[in-house]
Length: 197
Image 1 (cartoon, rainbow, N blue to C red):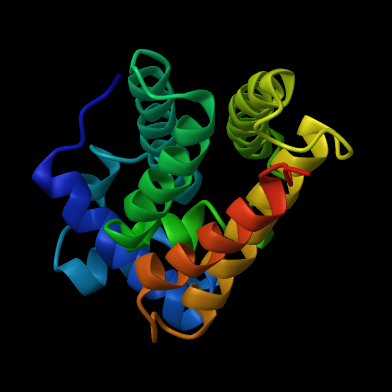
Image 2: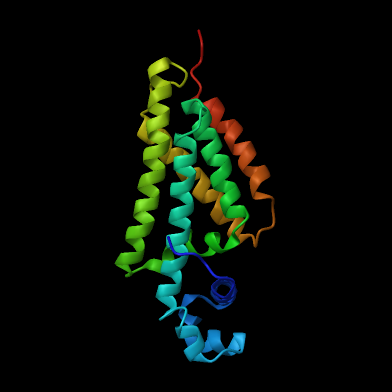
């Protein structure tokens, strides 16, 4: 996995500022170089074009997600607690790296860019499979209700997280994402846990 240098992080932050302010169509290597007071040649040493910059961000995010999955898979947590911990840590990953909310959760950036949408699709599938697999284990023991499929539960959870992150992004980060996600987690628990008769 490629490591991000301090210079690359500086470039990415400035690129995200431009995207936030003026949209992806106004992000060019020329403008990025001007705003950072670099030569275009200096920027090209790090990123060949703006799409290679976005690809770099997605690769890093994808790696972070895979590391989180492995950490939880290797833990002694119950399947139910793996799902809850995944939601908390996934949200924390986004809230502590606002770059991700601009790039990863802005699907309009990737229209007609098949190689980028493929990465996003892989991330979504990995997250869905992780949640669905753990919920299925809980359904076997009766801890989680069985009248809704594990895959549908995963879609409900991931869709809710995505909507919350987009709301946070479009509000210009006006609320605490971790606090609001904590409220949603409590609702997930009520929805998921099997009612004992």
